[in-house]
Image (tube, rainbow, N blue to C red; front, side, top):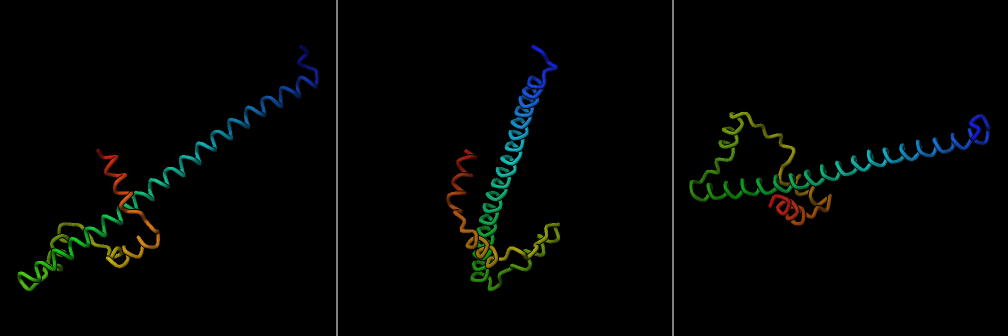
Length: 122
């Protein structure tokens, strides 16, 4: 085989070019696939966290209602102050109404996500 022949050189260049193009395409697909998968996992975690926030806000509301019935005080602000003094801060961005609106806007299937989470944990 004569490597100085222009037809041979052309064929080698095409072959190497095809291999390099395939490698670049495979790497790009892998990177994009990972980004999409990471985004989907983050979205699922956000949706679960919003559901957990909604649950905890409902627990707080029920707890305050029971205190109100028993002692005629909810102690809500007092308890929040104690927690605040321990270093945890309430941003106020996830009020019950805002969480509900976020969950409804995203049409989240919380029950299904919670089941998936629980199945993964068992």
